[in-house]
Image (cartoon, rainbow, N blue to C red; front, side):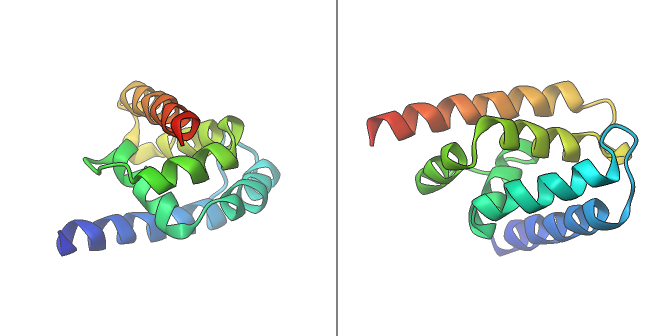
Length: 115
């Protein structure tokens, strides 16, 4: 479990550095900064890592993170996951990740409605 946690943490750090320093063709640099400034500040680092682990790995969604995700909003969730999925190292699997992204959103909304 600790190894998975450290791998997810390392993945998040790499993605964060890539987002900060690598210009992207699909999202202009100013748009990337805007996503970073407006979306990532709306969710706790713990929940961001949890959601990334669920979408890009085999993580289990923490119920409290469902509430954070819904508070963050669908536009932010969709754009951030798409931004990560567009990385060259993930090409060819975007559809899989976007489906998982949508599944996480749907589950989170249903959890938030029952709370």
